Image 1 (cartoon, rainbow, N blue to C red):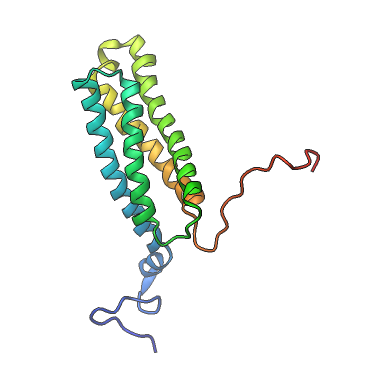
Image 2 (image 1 turned 90 degrees about the vertical axis):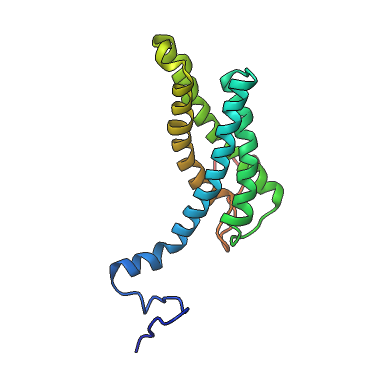
Length: 182
């Protein structure tokens, strides 16, 4: 006979009826990771957004430079949050390895975000400067389009390569000693 859920007892696979229960059993851990990743990312986003706008409006810094500075600072906050909260249950490898991979993939994400901003400001802005060379256009290109695409990339890459599942060996670095004919 299957156990029932009472009081503070968590539901088990035997107690979660129907297809929704099976989905929760199968993907619940992923949903928890996604919600924590989104929380950490939301905090980093606010830091990035506030700092970018401060640097461009109050300090007069060029937009792409300001975006680079704000993203590096926000990424440091994100690394700490993801390492010690989002994926704290995962296998720990050498901290320098995690940090280097995190910032490598974050650099790719930064490239995606800055690329979206640059295309908007300098590509489309060359054609329609009154529309695409505004603070609103910079924020839409950077924070909606760029951050959206970069966030999907970051979640996948951090989960796959940086904070690996316990028992999963880290992806080895490419070897330069291999026989090219192999």
